Length: 267
Image 1 (cartoon, rainbow, N blue to C red):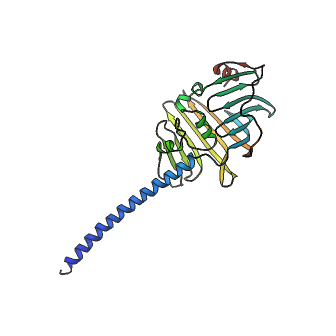
Image 2: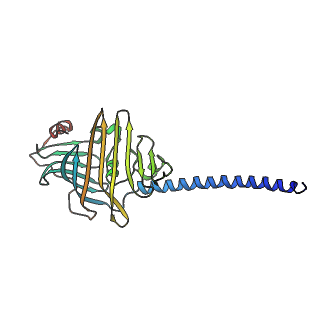
Image 3: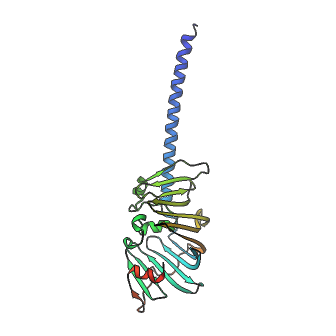
């Protein structure tokens, strides 16, 4: 019993210090998770290591197959075109930081509009920066292109059993699913009767260790109607090439409203 007076204080001290060590370990773990989350966000918000990308495309739009091309110059221009049998270009959309140009080559029509005029833009919050991020496999915060602003508006969850980490954007409600490293695998958003999902797959190295998805799939549901688009890329290049940021409109082409042009394209 005489030793008890010495043993009890030692046990209490051990328990207390053990509790402190556990608390400190939890703090360190939380700090490590926050640091890793911040690193992951910065990795996926930061621009890719290349400034230009071109590719041949194979679209499947609600079961209809179309070929096309993609050209991108980061911060300057995005061009998407669709052709019949890979020969005759039928439609083209060009996106710039301040405007969008849509062309109907078959009917010789074109429309110049702003991002606010794009269908579902209010639900998506899309501007040039967001569309660019989607096509470069980056995460984003609508209205906050600066990296520091974006970081403050994103939340990171713990990795699941498969190592995937979800990043939640606070205002528009986008959820980004990442592989826990440098790749973005899915983007999801759902609000009321509207939903948007984009998935990336078949990643391949294009510049050093930087990997880019050669397959994209998009599903958009609005007012009970679901549209699906899948894209496969080939002949992908990140070499700088000689192509104009903006296509010149010919005299034969007539400028119309975006609604009229889309009605002619039956989109």
